[in-house]
Length: 206
Image (cartoon, rainbow, N blue to C red):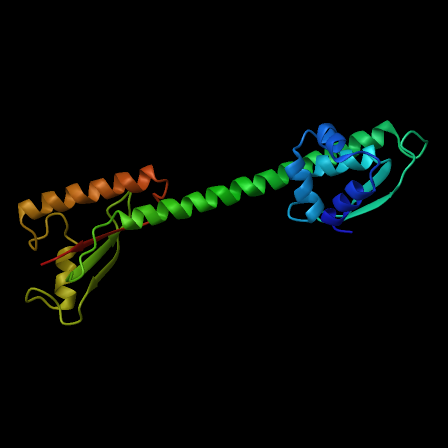
């Protein structure tokens, strides 16, 4: 059966009152109510403990399904070593589940940081061309320009001149300094957000 069904069965058939179950498991009545109504699933150790309190043997088939049977807790069918092994396995599985949650959180954080990075960029609606460069080197990833070229240069001529950055004759000294300043700010921001493997794009209006 599913673990949600198992916790409901254990609560409903228990000789313990709800208050006693709460005290034994060190949880609130609200939590027990959510287990009982199926709104929430208990942690593995809580389900194991409640089964023992009810003199039931609980066997985990996987992370979501269990077998639940009457068990002679103090009889010859369950040794202390078996209990220790079961606890170790349960702890390993719980650690894996906790790690999955951490990875999910880290992934969400990375997505959020990437979104911040995107939003931090000033958008120029009518830019003439754009340049994508790596963060840690000055390698050009992509240069976008209209097919008709720009500033009297053909498409190929303009791209060749752009690649001479920062000594390209396309830019005056003042423009080069401002572009370098803006690029440094965005590189630093990308690194602070932990997304330094993304490319930087510069959109310049002429």
